[in-house]
Amino acid sequence: MDRQEFLADEFEAHRSHLRAVALRMLGSTAEADDAVQEAWFRLARADTGGVENLGGWLTTVVSRVCLDMLRSRTSRREDPIGETAPDAIPAPVGAADPEHEATLTDSVGLAMLVVLDTLTPNERLAFVLHDMFAVPFDEVATVIGCSTTAARQHASRARRRVQGADPATGASDVVRRQQIVEAFLAAARGGDFDGLLSLLAPDAVMRSDAVAAAAGAGEVSGAAAVAEVFAGRARVARPALVDGAAGAVWAPAGQIRAVFDFTIVDGRIAGIDVLMDPASIDHLDVVVGGAA
Image (cartoon, rainbow, N blue to C red):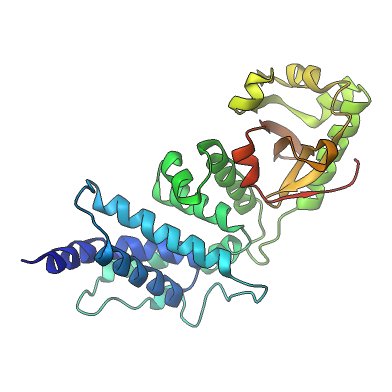
């Protein structure tokens, strides 16, 4: 068996998995097939002699292809369903797999595809790879081109938006959550300890990335402890949308130096992640608002 025949056999063994990943990434069976085909072209051209896990290598390749396709989409919104619904996914010639088709139909509902289409490309990739296919965050970070911390944040924001979305519209209550963040910032600036407590869940936690921790912002647990950290502070923090979710930033002279990513559950702040690593911040989609 020559090299091309060997690669073709190996690729066919992983095709079903690659198509499942691509479909969830792109929401279109035609685009998913294009992405899988491109992965084959790259495999045929690559030197894979040192690759120990070909399945993982192919998953990374098809994920990067899908990410490029998501990022290149213009203002013309692509139909997340396409002309064929998930229950009509064509099988590769000579490789009919009814069990695989049934799995895709059960696991990718039309409503879920609509919701996934509201995520940013980085959020969608992180959520699909980690939450749907259990890919470790360090590998997700490699695909996106960001830190592991940033990859976790992308998946976390995606998870919250998926859980809080209306499947009929894909819309989440961003405005209400942003109002909670703005109220928190106002209470912090005013030193309103009781006001902060009223906005925090009892088991609220503040976490920091390595850069923020080195600057003195360590992990703090419990509403009272978190309120103590912020009371009388955050005077120059500004509300912002962080990858489409409610958040805040510290941006002296217009340069974002810190991002505050809020997790809000049942109308109360359950977590605040403080990000100061420039590499992580550079990969976030941040829209800064006015003063809170």
